[in-house]
Image (cartoon, rainbow, N blue to C red; front, side):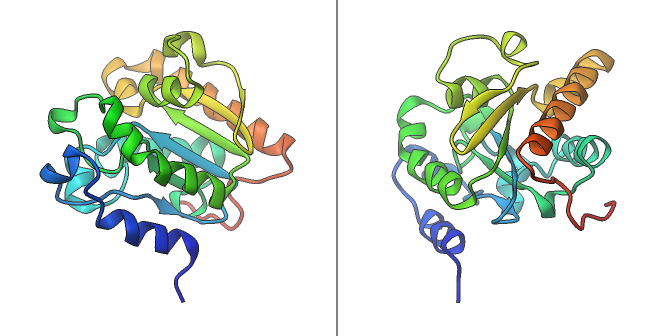
Length: 197
């Protein structure tokens, strides 16, 4: 019998509430452990994600997987990964307010069903929207914020680290360590039973 997240994903798969539905190949709902203590939230799917129907599966996803293992000792099977919007915006532009509003109930329900102790916001757009602020990512990162059922740790988008070299990669690593400490403070573990990918 399908669980609540699977039923929600099935509902999202047929969504036509905004213009993004007309250009998508896939609804990229999310993936991972429905009981995860750690959740990653990005902005929206890119071309590769749209093709495969899974979040963060391109070059950015490979870096995310690497940092997850090296800094948190976990894999995507033991976390949950989602985006603010579930369909790819054309040319990877930022999602528009009405598109976000159409998708908001899906992410809200994901958060309520999973109840993660720690959310890592991947990139400026996700961090600003989740925290309802206009502060830049470099001011936001390096801190933890009360959020939903726990705390939110903003960090750079993996694509920014791929473009920027050692400095942004080091900042992402530091933010992942902050998330690991937040998980420990919440009495949760990111990688129970995880094996190196």
